[in-house]
Length: 328
Image 1: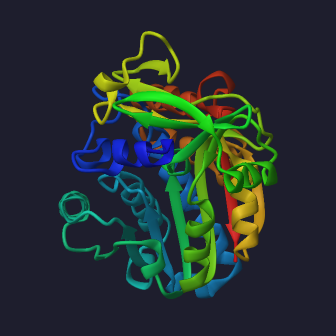
Image 2: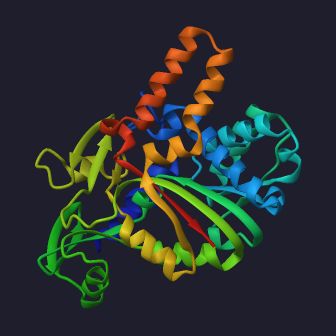
């Protein structure tokens, strides 16, 4: 099978890696910005709040998360919006894009745990089901989980019995890769469809997403496996695919140039592409920390400040992760 089909089976197939909840953070395979600090979500919500001040009709729109895990990010955003303006939880509508019913139930249970019956959530099984006048859509680390093909020297990767073999690449794949200036590395499959489906049903939209990668093509392999915070490149001789298949996370650096072109072709306008550090500071992260300091103990303040350093330090998450904001 092609590598994209293999990766899709690995992550989303029967008993695939994402078919059950995985711990995120110290007890899991990796950390995310969401698991690092609730101030990550608060900062994005603060940005959304500023947009609502510029265009008041957004107060009656939707806040929707794609790839929500248990709903931590969405809840952190709702919590901060509630702090800023109590009336927003009455005017805004909240949604999650999630196709698995058991995951939906876990999300609803967590949201009830956070807010009781005060918050109502609408689930969409796919982004193309969202048909609304306005939505602020947020996602964290979803583009690195789209299946991809692997190419090099005019060949593409195929997998049989968890062994990779290289064969002459499909001409359409090579032409598609050339369009995005790629001759080696990962060629993501599905960005165009995702962008088109989002554009189809949402009349006006702000889409904010964070992920690791670069806008410029490296033309090298970054695909790798994470297990218990150990990272192995896909082609590392220590990695046995048969042992890692469906049991560990598999991911790659995002080609943001490809993401941007896919969304622009779907009718979106790129509002901003920048490092996570620059985006979060611009969204008001430092101001939020200062407000927290006024009511927190010194120990709690220091603990939260250390978490925020992880989010914005150049050598940790700050420069490795990027933010894209698209408007429609």
